[in-house]
Length: 170
Image (cartoon, rainbow, N blue to C red; front, side, top):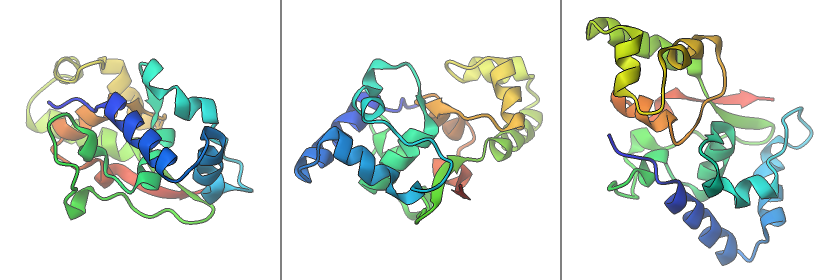
């Protein structure tokens, strides 16, 4: 499985920010614009600036940054092309709407594949770096999931990440 390159992703975000002449706070304002006036917690400039210092970054932040960049998550898999195929393109969110992973749908597909492959949850977790069986079964409850780890799931399922991304009104 290919690893999501958080350093490359953060570098691309920083390069695009600098190319547009934006400070980190100005970038945060641009990225938060789609959900102004909603109950969503805004993305902070420090979160954007310090993504590479964290083991996991909330998918909500990464998805909004990817949308701002106009890039698919797969374009940051180590060794992948930066040119996505149409199935990899993230949906457009628009005003008052944000991108989120549908973890319930993800769980359902993992469970289906688990059964087809005749695996226990523990055996599935052993195939997905950084996951435990309980982390996988907890996806049924709809928690947020973080990058870079989520990309191991999409690859294991042989689905583009966009297959699990939903546009949510907040």
